[in-house]
Image (cartoon, rainbow, N blue to C red; front, top):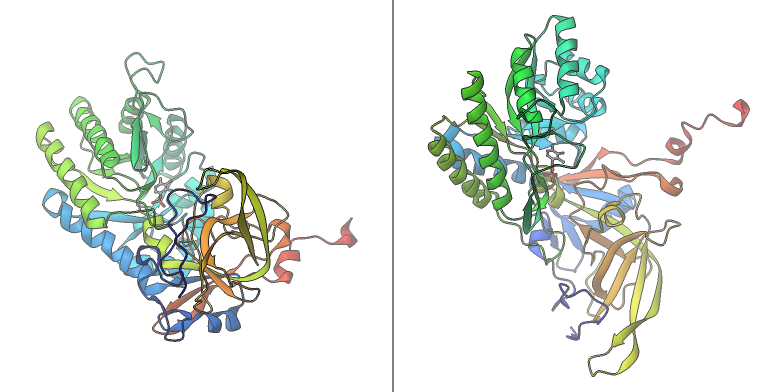
Length: 489
Ligand SMILES: *Cc1c(COP(=O)(O)O)cnc(C)c1O
């Protein structure tokens, strides 16, 4: 193939010109995605042209094997690392990242539990037949109906987010003559993202109970301690322990370590002061994945061992028995299992001013090609919401054309409707080609919308060489279903 090594001055620094524009960067893809001998992308042996013919595009294409393998790898890695500390770890898959009954079922089969944060997510779990004992319920504003539903389903844990909510849960449980199993979500002042974490004394966010000592009116008491004291005094509340969630797309274990130390210190102090035992500690989710070749996540075993070392030594220092540890990965289990398959439509190239070119000449322009696909911000809102970076490759064939700096955009009436801001695609990409965007398993379908009356794509799961819908795509009928019609005007 031809190769042009010259990076476009319009490209971000982290984006290298690919040596082979057809190559799959393995960390970004499900384990069973490969090119066939004729160059087409296939998942577990199923070529994308078949998926397109059977299900249309856009389409979320999920590897069931990859999802299960990642779920197992978290469970196995953390169980192994924490075996001698607390007999293993409970892994709660964060359902908000992607949830349907099939996935809830896989989660249970692989020995994981499930985190939910609304009545709707509880409804999916119930439909999937997940036992309440294996469910958690999060949320900073749970309705009474949701709290009642949690008690109806005999949930293993309700993660209480505020003093206000604690009182409400206690009252509802008492009214029913039942006991609510409760964790308290604390804000340890640790915020982590990718390679960094920052520590703050005070928390300015909607979630959780502050651990800062001046966070309530009660002299010297933090909101967190006030909640422990209150929870201990309510006869219809069983306080299981403490919870924190420090961020998302985290690569380094040090933020988790600092949070774990803070929570263990607090847990030990509370056990002593209130003569109680808090048997559980949940360190949340947030484990990062590779969206682009610039992302370098660590394997679960490495993170698990680093966190275990901290928990082990902190518990020894405090002279306490370690509580049972739980974690809540979402993205790191489902994110890489899935790619989105799009069809290319309109192409255009614009020339963009760059301040100086490589030879120092001023006022030169460089080409940027816009590649429009048949979806966009309605099936992947993350670039718009979070400036998230993605990658893409040509999927329906291999190409021997040179790489060209491209921007993959959707079809919405919005100029910010970008799917992949910067990627080198082969120069000969044309209308009708299929494009695959990897790493779309988490927070894409989950955040999808009907903006511009686009139908939300379906999700297919591929396993043992065959593909089946686990969520069907919407039809025009679905789009009009809730419109009450002109007869009612
Ligand atoms: C979102 C969330 C998670 C999962 O985060 P990931 O980045 O997908 O791992 C876990 N716990 C809580 C409380 C969350 O809000």
